[in-house]
Amino acid sequence: MLQGIKKISVFVMALLTLYSCGEKGVVVNQSKVLSQQKWEESKALEFEFDIKDTVNYYNFSVLIRNTENYQWSNVFLFSDITFPNGKTRRDTLEIVLADQYGNWLGNNSGTIITTTSTFMEHRRFPLEGKYKVALAHGMRVPVLEEITDVGIKLKQWQE
Image (cartoon, rainbow, N blue to C red; front, side):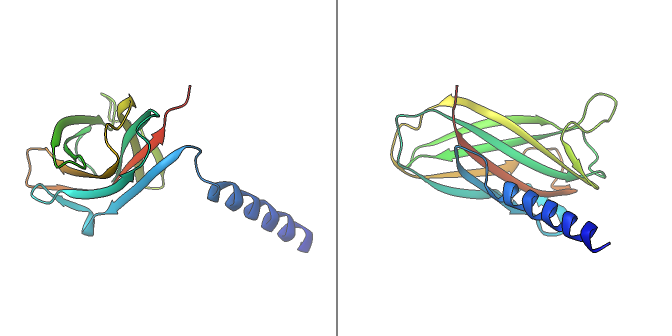
């Protein structure tokens, strides 16, 4: 019995070590937890990060976590990226969360579904400095329920 517990402990420690190593090439990985799993349309989620490398290419992704009780198969987002020089670029994104039959497309962990969607691929940042990203939902309801958190990930592009 004690041997079995030791083997399980070693296995769990090995998994935790691998998990903590992180994903290669990730420059930014931030998320915001939504209070009471509610996202008001008037409350944009803001993320800030510094860019020093304007030579390499990056992929930019948005992460959405929702519960199984989320009532739509998608989510529309407005993304405002503010550059170090103060100029802003707005994009509208649709992230598909479920197929036509209602099956979740993201990774399930209990009752939480995590969906990651790349919306800019193989892009360079034109300026060094602090960038700001504001994400607001663009659904037709004032409060979007059953979204647990929203995040962004910036990863160096690799061939």
